[in-house]
Length: 150
Image 1 (cartoon, one colour):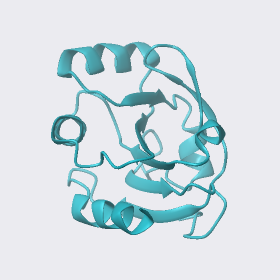
Image 2: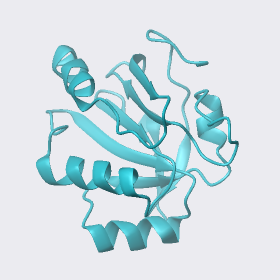
Image 3: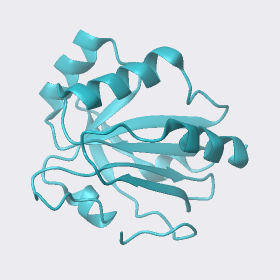
Image 4: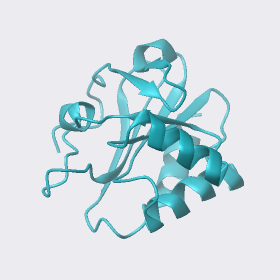
């Protein structure tokens, strides 16, 4: 992985499901959880995003949660509305941000299922890559990392 804990997180701007610009740098002073996932409408991605949205397990003070995948703004909007996902979904259609973060899957057409937490100062505080794409991420480790950041 090209990114390590302590590195300054590469800034980026992507479109949300509502076709609005979302810029990482605009969220300094908050912890940002970047949930990279392969594809909308796929079983594990759907289960994870719906669970995170429904159980609010990542709802910590001064924390922003976003999903990032290669799907289009329109796919994100339809999926978010259909599944009632509450967090924003960012469209990394060309996998440029996944590449910046070293998270392009070896298959080349999707990102890894990965979690990157960017702390309030804009530094990488946590990185986790799920090597077996069909398997869900370790949410316990993500929650523990957020608790540690406060």
